[in-house]
Image (cartoon, rainbow, N blue to C red; front, side):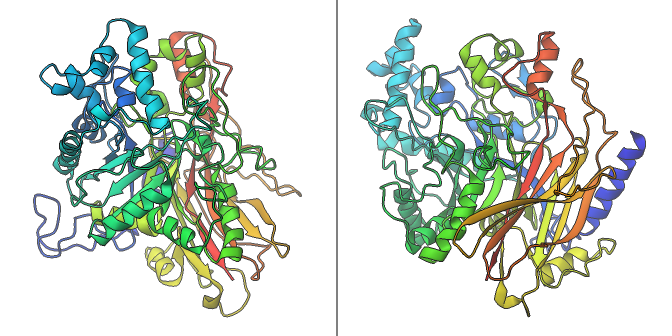
Length: 625
């Protein structure tokens, strides 16, 4: 293990040597250079930063329901490494701080529950407040249920959405982000969640389809009030509002999440009003939603086995329970709900309408509802207060606990940015030079171009050459930039989490449209560990498994510290549009449910696999003829 650890340190040092700081002059207290106004870690070839832009506190009504009392300030302190109180009565703490965060409490009833619980606040005198605070759990649950159904049916309790109350709450949300923003050390963004959850029909309001977006503001210049789903349930109306804010000098973007439980609506081939998609729709959507959150506590939205039956790794953290109440939950339809399918459909749409509404980059986040950004399998603190705060509750024998065992711990957002500031990280969001992981801090790099075949990873300036001669993840490769019909070369690289598991393999996922107008996909194993070989069908043997299920441990005796290669598509056809993205797999490790079961000395749960192959996804590179 010592040899492996020292090798990793050497690789990380070499990796960081390519990220040469360019700042000069005296470094000031806020971490910026007095001479250049750049932070001390500034690098033209980008640094990897890890964060979470999807966190809820007691200011979200659905967190307050489960006795969560943390504040936005608590969430930011937790992300920076401090311990905060947990609903279990314990103090909780991340094993490693994050680099950036956005607290994104729901705009619908933002802060209202906390205010109603304050005897000095006028909202506490309302009839709904008295019922919510009732000692009779049946009365209280019914009152909460009315508010939840009101969100799904766009029928708010008007006494709880008075403009002056919402303005003051939103102003304090922004002020909290301002208090914790520390350029060069820790970046925050004012944010909120727009919570559109339309039901199938009025007869089934409990069957809610997830169309949620997190709205992220670049800086402290924000509107006086968020646009909520009470203003409109339609994403197109949200985008119109965002365009108005942008015209007023307010920079912002929206990040969709949990397409997997949208029942086919997140990536539908029609608008939310049932209209055919056109060029204006595609351009408007991509201007406002350059990235998508593809994994969080409610599972991953990348790929489903029913849509990609030939993908041996598609059955990963599948969660299809729709929003709402009652058991059993209705299941979300896969078609129109997953990213890879959307990427393929986007290629086809570009051929027919002249624009691609699904040309977005990937991030992960958590969607934790207890103020805690929870991504660590061996440090699970739950996601919803009293619903799942302890191993005993999470392993209980009841439908709700069984469903919760199917949730993930949470993902993480990776960005390649010049420095840890709002300006640099927001630029990475806009250019899509971002990547998602299922929790580990795997570093992933991906470039494409027609002049990259001579890249030498041994040279310290190879990244300068990659940026100069190619394009990074999130970008377009256009045929006019090629002197012939030759296939482009892709730079593929991943480095393991310094505190995590070794890497199994890197795959390239390709999607394309053929001459018949049909969409296709194929997965290529491009580099891997442990001297394995590809068989005649292009398959690579499993890496093995070092997990000891009796005590929830694993070893890094298999796998690799880093993987890298140059790759050229052997089936490239310059005539047809395509996308490419990386999927990086770790070796198997214990899933959080296994850690809980071993801690309690109980049988491993049957709903989920005992091990997990954590992974990362780069944003795509698109090829356009």
